[in-house]
Structure formats: C-alpha cells, structure tokens
Amino acid sequence: MQLPDRPRPDALLPDAASAHAAPRAPQATAADASVPGASFPAAPFPAAPFPGASFPGSDTPAMAQYLSAKRRHPDALIFFRIGDFYELFFEDAKTAADALGLTLTARDRERKVPMAGVPARSADVYLRRLLAQGFKVAICEQLTDPADAKGLIERDVVRVLTPGTLTDDESLDPRASNFLLALRPPGKKERRRKAGLAWVDLSTGRFLVADLEPEAVLDEAARIAPSEILLPESEEGTEWAARFKGVLKAAVTFVPPWTVEEEGAARVLMEHFRVATLKAFGLERLPPSVAAAGAALEYLRQTQRTSLAHVSK
Image (tube, rainbow, N blue to C red; front, side, top):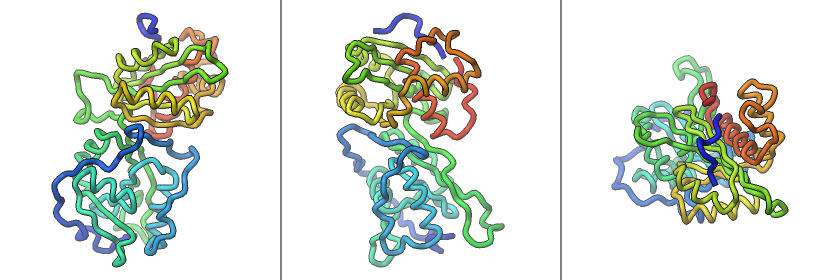
C-alpha cells in the first residue's frame, strides 16, 4: 500500500437446455437507478428480502438454493449453474434479458417465474457485457459433479464479479488501470476532517491512499477514473453518490458503515499486511484513508473469496 507520489488535494427444469430460444436483438439495459450501478454489499452484509420467494414453482430444492443465493446477494444478478447453462430467474431474468438481448421465457405455465439463460461455455462474453454496464454478478456454481451426485446437486456462490474487481485480461484495457475506489467522507459533525480515499487495482495489486480536503475529492476521483466506487451506507454516502454521478460513470456500491470505521479498518489492514502497526505506511495516526483502505480490502475479501496476497504494493 502506498501514499501517492505527491500530496493529492437438481434440475429446476429437466430440459433446461432446450428452454432457450434464439436471442433477439440487444436492447437498452433496464437499469435506471438514480446512481448507475448502485448496489449493496454481499454476504455477510445485511440482506434484503427477495420477493420471488413465495411465487408458485419456487418451492423446489434447487430453487431454494437459488433463493438462498439471492438473499445473500440481493444487489447482484445470480448466474445459477444448471447443466450447460447459467440461469437467471424473476427480476434478474428480466434485467439480464433487457441488458443482453436474451429471450425471456418462464419456468411455469402461469409465467410467474420468468427465466433467461446463457450457455456456460460462452458465459464470459455475457459477463463482460453486464459488468461494462455497471452490473454486479454472483456466480452460483455446481460444486458436485452431476454424474456423481445422488439427489440434489450442491451449489453455492463461488465469486462475485463487479466492475471494480475485474482481473480478466480480455476485459481490461492494457493501457489503463481498473481501479476500485473507496471513500470515507467526513461526517456531519466532522466538517473539519479530511476525506479518506483508497484505490486498488486488483489485476496488478497496486494499492494507494490519500487524505484530502472534501472539496478536492471530485477532482482526484476524476483523475483516478475508477470503475467502481465504494461509499458508506449513510446520509453522507448518499450525498457523495449524487456528487460523483455528475463527474464519473463508475458504478457505485454502498457498504455498511462499520467497514469505514478507523479502528476496525486498521485491524483489517494489519492482518492483511502482517504488521503490528501501520507506522511503516505513515498511517499510525489512523487518518480517514485508513478507513477507506480497510473498506476496500474487506470488499475484496467478500467478493473474491481467494488470496489477496498480491495486493501489497
């Protein structure tokens, strides 16, 4: 982690594979939030209720797996693996159909359980398109071989893909960094405090922080040009989301306030870097940037579910 060089102001459907008609022409995305890509964090962060839970046809064991994944990742589109396809259901299916130009079908005759899907062999192409539009996608994979499974195939979310956590070379511009930016804004009672920023490129491990006067944040964020911005789920976070909307095209993700508390964030950073203090980084006084850095690292832990040892520069 570095300071900047200069101070910077089983089967749900037995014949699921045959349920997909030829795709129609691409349409505009259905996402129309006040802040493009606005979302809420994945488990173990608080989950929102999923309205499809009581729909007819949603009571099979496999659908229960889907609903469980959706409850734990309410902000993400769930790519649910069934055989050779990744299926989406309910509102996820409608959103994906609009964003990708897919044919929207239904799991039940009453058409109360909309579904859409993409072939697993070409899923990367569709995932790149969704991420480019600011969506977050949770991959719910089959954890047991269908040929060996006796009864229900075990499934679980193995990774959450977001615009700011891409590492796939085919999805990245080799001429530019793909930064995830976290902001710890000053609170209403902290008007004299600086704002803390931390930005990380997961593909390279580059990790930087800065503490700025609030009025300098937008210019610095525009210079960093992040693909995704993390903000606390608070009044201040909502205000900053509106400010960023007019300056950046980045997706915005809201994270729980506890992730941007200095002391907890400092523990996350010391654990990651295997140090007893943050003195070597010049952060022993726990400036706001420590909170931003801790929030960014915690978010990466929750979404990537893999080693982040390379995030050390």
